[in-house]
Length: 236
Length: 284
Image (cartoon, rainbow over all chains, first blue to last red; front, side, top):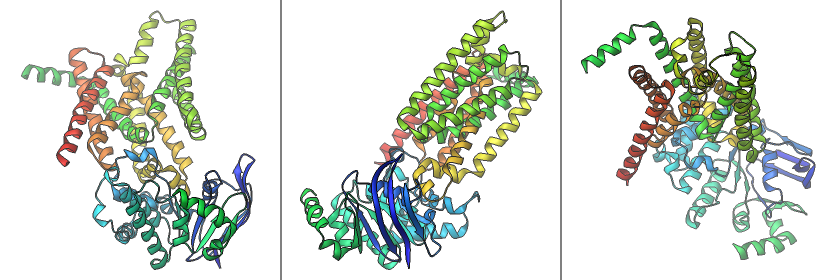
């Protein structure tokens, strides 16, 4: 059974349609990459899946008790965070905020889970450090740990490697792959890095004028990859 | 030195001085609590805008001869706070423009209304008091002291109860929304509490200087401390100490209360900036 099914989605703002007739599903354990040109509607799709904005038409359904608010989200970093005084633990714990509801403080189970997520990503040693003083790659891992705290099943990553150097980029991709295979976390990744998408993911959704959805192998054989994939790798 | 100490004890034997110190400390405490959030959310100017709205409301209330003007001013300021924060969310670029518009507009209209309709003989004195606080803190009535205490308690209670939510919404509102935190409600709560604090603080430093109470302690603390909790705690302690020091100085010297407190805040901002700089140097 699919964890997340989107049927005939139309996306956009205030009546201006960006994407139409979008159909795809994400099964438990999948690694879906959402690729496409700038302005093709990747971010809009992501915001819609997260429940931050309603679709113009169409349906988003979830099963197995997954709620849209239980998708762990790794956003792109904002300017506010660059000089924000917060410890790594504080940032990671805030992943539980939505789940805690009206309960004012976090409980022991949540603290233990946060510690285990830090360990999983190899950053236990950073727990007491100040978030703003970390390197880009370390900050990204901290935000990933926070995303894991907000979910048990699915994470959605928005350009997870933007601004990272090549070495750290590879590390990040390996961590995500590892979460997908060993921790059985379903991954949806929004990216313009076609090479990495093809290398790591099991399914690909290409958003644009003609949308493509299928497995990685189907995508490699498609016209969309021939046009966009080659161009993408030439540039990148 | 002993003479100075004697004079302070003498002043402390007057109940109105004690009242002033209590209310001053409470106001400093509340404003610094919120200051951390506002500064980090890039909303520092909302405090400034709202204080001018409160001035406008005060002017209208005094022209209409309303005896207990605090509730009127409070209601007016809360509504403006909610409106300002909502426009700030919808269109980011227009947020600061609307704050500027409302703040200057309220200031100008307030002064205009006072000028046209006021029957007071000492108009510029009244205006100066509202803008810079001056002595009104020393003439607080029992009711005002109690009201201030209750409101301050409420602000602290709300802040502690929603502490984790406030952190989450401040650090990353999009993430908070996406993972099921009702960010809109918490923004509303923050706006309301800001309005309450500003109306409280008008008695102390006047409407022009309120921003200083909100902004300086938080910025100073953020220079040195590295976790949200440490910054909040430090900012509260710093703000209360500066307020008490400023008030005592002003009582002894006869300097205006509001400006003296802000001057102390500025001095400590300088000290903390240097301390933070030294800390980073030694870390390297």
